Length: 305
Image (cartoon, rainbow, N blue to C red):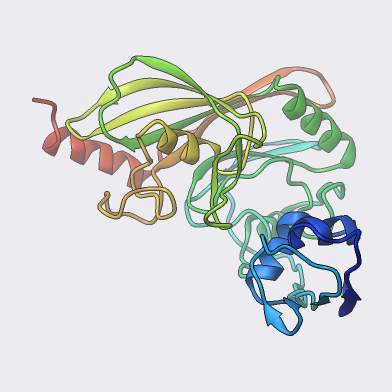
């Protein structure tokens, strides 16, 4: 939808405005409509409303969609830490602070810009996410698999869907976890209170994280987390849900936390079957310097009593 919409409600449109508009505008997601409503792009009888506003017969509704930000995707000569590469796949070690693909607010200087300069990529994920099979957050470091052609992309994506690939992260969390290991099985979806956040919600998507304690400090715990599913912010939200938010996390962590440039989370291990040969491939990445230095610091200053 790109044009302004004017409509007058009748007896078939008397529910919540976000729900009714989602039925009327089938090409727009309900979450996107909620954002438009909250941002004032939707008015009822000339006034802004909340997403839960209940329509009545005769309401004059005006929807003015946001104008998309123009993004010109250009290859950029940005150094890459390539762990493995052949004609089908690239395994790259992404640094903390790098956005994976262009989006509003981050139109360039992304991993995709750097990859396009280096190599042709698959086209399945569209213009702004070529080659990208899975993502990690901007301030999360570590291993990503990238598809160089569509055949490889379909194979890697199928492995993610079937949960046959391996993804293991190292995280530094607040508090001391008493258990040696555990499983967090809690559905995730967009937060009802803050649209920028994910949360554990009853009607969310199935999400499972397995964790194991690697080292305990007086006030923090170092854990490994294996993903059974790959939801947005999964480890960050799941660990907060069990009372152990990630250290340094600006979105889900406490205000008083360890200094740094974001959450202490590193994608340490990545495994998959090669899309052409079927060979099982496993890659590992050492903790980046900033992460290892913080562990060294805690071992000296935050020893358990």
